[in-house]
Amino acid sequence: MTSILFRLIANAVALAAAVWLLDDITLGTEGAGTSSQAVTLLIVALIFGVVNLIVKPIVKLFSLPLLILTLGLFALVINALMLMLTSWIAGDAFQVDGFWTALLGGLIVAIVSWAVEMVVDRD
Image 1 (tube, rainbow, N blue to C red):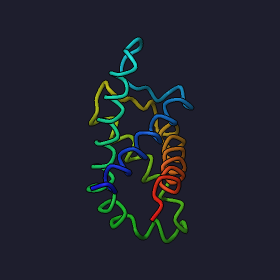
Image 2: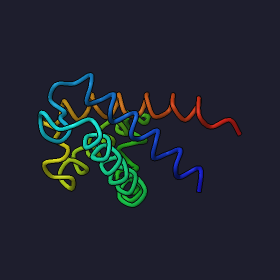
Image 3: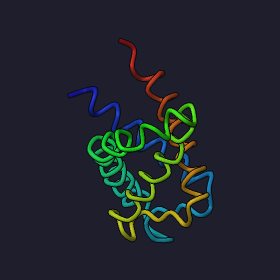
């Protein structure tokens, strides 16, 4: 249970970093309160976690030849697609404008979530 909570927090921090660093990734509406944005961020992190849990392994399986051919670099494209799918599911609460923004956002999310998991998870 704590592992799921740590992953949710890591995803939330990573998504917050992507929203903060990239202007084309927006969270909620402008002028919303900090607490409502935090709740929105947690909901989007939960959606992102479910997408990564269910959809990402299926996409990786079907794109295995491309992953092998590109020596794993196609995983960046898969991360971008998962971020765009999360944006589509979340609707107005989380918006990613364009593929290149999603690619850069996916890279930021991957690096930040890895770093947060390394700091938080002390097993």
